[in-house]
Amino acid sequence: MGPVKKRTSARTAAQGGAMVIDHRPRLAPAPSHAAIRPAPPRWGYVSRAVSRYGAVSTTLVVYPPDASERDRRRADLSRAYAPVAGAVALFGWIGLSAAGAPPLAAIVAILVVVLSVGAALSRRARPVRRASAVVAACCSAFHEDDEQRAAQRRLDALADAMVVASASFRAGEVDGDEFARTWRAVHAHALGAVSARPAPPSSPGACRAAAARCIRWAARRPRR
Image 1 (cartoon, rainbow, N blue to C red):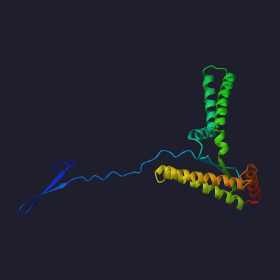
Image 2: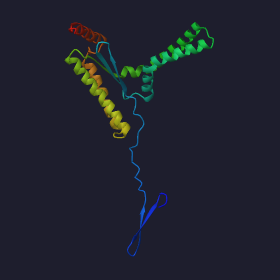
Image 3: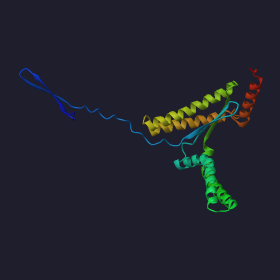
Image 4: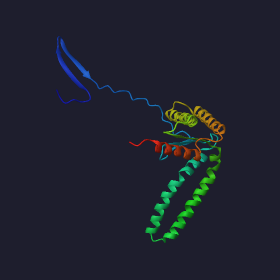
């Protein structure tokens, strides 16, 4: 038999004639993937920080749904501006110094540009930050506190609702109206959680107190 091509034939002898068997490759139908939508609107963010002694601080920021996309983008840029500006300032100073500029003059020029841009960006992002719902919680891995645990569970539930809604919107499982309803509900619940707790356990003093309790707990542990 010759080399195999896209269409191959096998002839076998049979009574009264020949039988031809054609083998055609079957092409599997192309899988129908759901249309991937663009990224959902910028609804906010979740940040977590772990201290040296096991105190975990979590902050959920939910932007106001009525704010424009441009204003929410400015709020995101304002949040990420400090580390980016620091890196740009460092490389800018190195480049200006290598080009022969006086180091002091280069530092002054870079500081003027960085501070001016940061002030303008912060001023434009101020309305969104003021209308945002901020929920924070701080709990210790070594000290049980029912109030702090409850605050952490509320924060996790609100954050999970927004994360799941964003993923469902991106996958095409929900439309923009349903995503907006979820966003508004989470924003309202977050504002209610903040107003219901005038002295949240996630304040810096509470986090320092949690860290201090962890230090005392570690000091009381028997050494092996």
